[in-house]
Image (cartoon, rainbow, N blue to C red; front, side, top):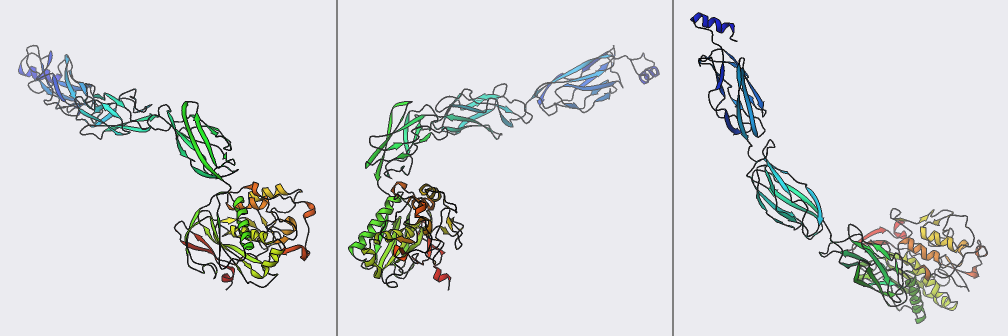
Length: 607
């Protein structure tokens, strides 16, 4: 229906009123453009009457009906020629067909159609699963595919895409692809490399940052076992080998394979094993034997097999000795008689039986007189411990029999690397005559190894002695306390293990308590005319210090109520080891041989 203004205009002209009967596009009803851009020619319609004449001032509404774009003129009135322009059509961001409709009362709507092409490629989106799992050297189930997209996520066909393996060493076919009508490009195939673990495929196209696909390559079935630890080692008779023999199950490409059963079996006369059957670790493919305790034969073997690999067998070899620990005694001066030298050798042999495990080598470079004024210079690699010994006048007969102690420790083991022992030449004949010489030397050598001398130093590093200087000092190392309990026939009501609480410095706080342990070798008093056993307590205390010990090498000894007695002693019954801890500085030696003073000699501290 014509508006009243239009009718008045027509009446004024003396013509019949114009009635809109048709709306037609003035140009093409179709257009092509890129998403988010304007079509080349703004859509326009012309409204005419039955005679084909344009009608002025008719309201026309423009509305986007699909695609999400917009027009400049949402509504506009026709011009004198009956034309109404959209003013411009900006397409939406979705590629494909978009429509725009012009409507006016009384005439059919006019629909314009535009084909919106995607914009330039902006990214490569994954169009297939991005993480897969497959066995090494096999094809993944789903060849990786990407979709080329413009900035609005529309698929972009015809894009050149390059696939390339960047991690894992796999191979692909069809590394160069072009995206199809859906924007999809798929690699021909992806065969994983031969190394188990993470593998990566990179996909790139010009104008994008590219994307990556990951795959986890799993090891194939086990085909063999390989040795990884514990072969050709030295061990001690009756003790587990230092390094547990270990194997790794591997596939055809030497990847570790988990969950493979492995059995370790000692060869003939080759000791015993605990934990004989193991299963390889899922991550490392490794399996280690339990404790392989060596027998008495010199050369011993351990065989590793698997029920999954009937043709595979590995043999580990160990050389068994009575001890790996070395004590190197070096005499300064004449070293006394053959009897004296033999007593030193016997004592060192006993400690080698007790300390079974090898310790750190130590690089010692020091000038003469560094520890004590009579010690020579040293520049060498020391295996375990070196002891400088001499027979010299000290204070005349019957007083200080000897003195000993460590002066250098290894920074790794925190155990003795070098020490000294000196004995009063005026007491040698008496000790030889009453048969006590070897026990006295054995006792003093124990101090060099750390008994009573390395229990506490500095307290922040090791603290095995509690209550020093008080009425009830005691040693609280775990193994020492357990062995004290084991050799005690009756319960002990005090704090175990009791440490000497009488005597001067060099006796108290550095020996077992004589009133409780009586004949034990490492009390501060040696009993005459009886043996002074080196008990499991002393051996266990060495383990608390950090040594690898052989408890079976200890002397038999049991504490009974009858053996416990109180002071005063009958002087004729005991040899008092007065002040037998040498006053020495203590230095720590680094792996490179550098020295650090960690404790000055008491005489130096008192100045």
